[in-house]
Length: 398
Image (tube, rainbow, N blue to C red; front, side, top):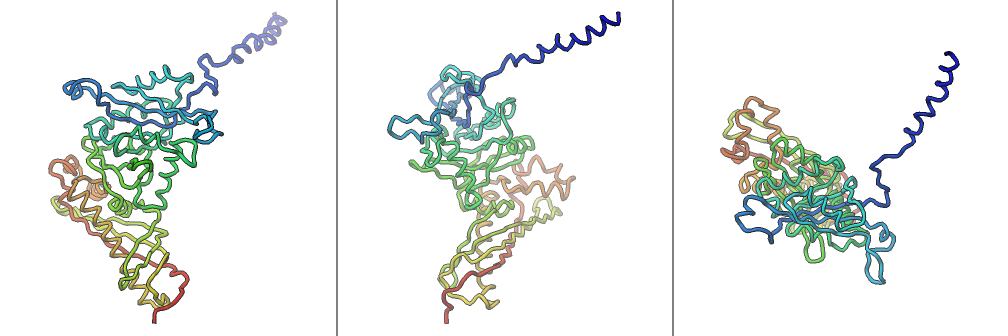
């Protein structure tokens, strides 16, 4: 019996070894993957009658797939070169069905684990509940990642994926590079990822999403779309100047410039660092008071006014001028969002909640809806601009 036991000890691993060496039954080779990197969702206008569309909305999805053979051949302009991407469209009231239908148009299995960007048209975003419905698939599916960037297009979203991508190979990569330039242009909104959108939707807070627009053959990425947290519906676009003020107020200002006139001559202040603090007074729920302090540090990037910056009074003069310009920009955002749209995309509700939670529980359902306590609030802006270096001086005015 002992010899039989030893024999089994030797042969048992060999019996089970084949099971460990077998491959995955559902494996797909990498060269057979249809890597989908971009999705654009538009409202289909040509299907169904008006009564049907009021009950069930039909969407057109445009999906950008990578064509590996064209990646090293440029953008396919002339010479029979193969493009590095393929845009496929599908129409359905279900995005899941659209994605399944893609398999009928391409030899490669659509694969969304490398999705980089979702573009939703303003027509879709303005339909009550449609934006959150669109996000549902991309948040729910196991292939999707929470780092996918979300944009709202002014006009047709599918057209944005057709942009000439020079010097990139892929339109989505070209658009992604433009979005990253928000660190240099404060009139652009910082990228918003679907994981962050999920948090906004779950908390019913209002928020903003970067805007994208085709202006002829060029891309315009200034401004943002305002989404109302009450019904997850887009209210309106805000322009670049309002977006810049919003970035100041929310503490998302990464760098940029401010121009001011000093005795009718232009001086440019390059902001290297910006931060803000917010204080709130909740003594009167019908007039909640916010005090927003914005502090910036920077240098003189350009000056047509010949000043002696070694004199403190000249430094102070320029700083005061820049503070006035920054304050006006921030107040423009307050006026647009509080007085015009009446939507708290400034993110001030969180300060009320932390300051006075008992009060917040009473007014949260009417913060920027119903009684709209946000629109009744007072928002005071204070700015402190610091010049760290005036730069080289060509000539001092006598």
